[in-house]
Length: 124
Image (cartoon, rainbow, N blue to C red; front, side, top):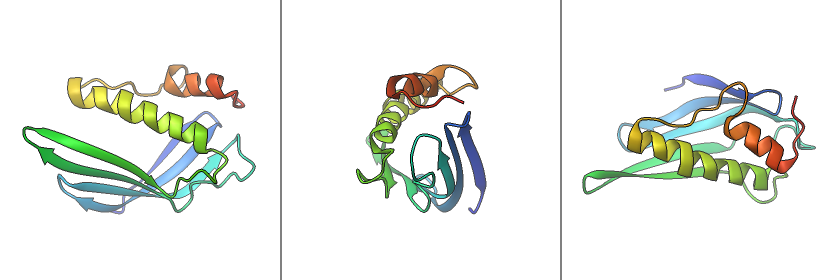
């Protein structure tokens, strides 16, 4: 609890997250404490939003429900962010859970590079 980590992809997206709730085998909640996008007018979108992972058993499987609480269509980044979360959750995380191999973003290439190109974002 209380651990903080930093995520970034070039200068396109920089984000600081803090673990604020942990219920073993049931739930993880991260608070976005700092954030910056290079493609939005309001560079601070996401600050004080939460990333929530709810876990539940279904037979011999685990169901994962992901919610980005506070990410709404009013945000300029909404379409890009919604697309990115869908790709991460249904692609990389799903593959990691099922096979042990996800698709992490490297410094170059990967999902982030694809999204930058797809959405025409500034690539610094």
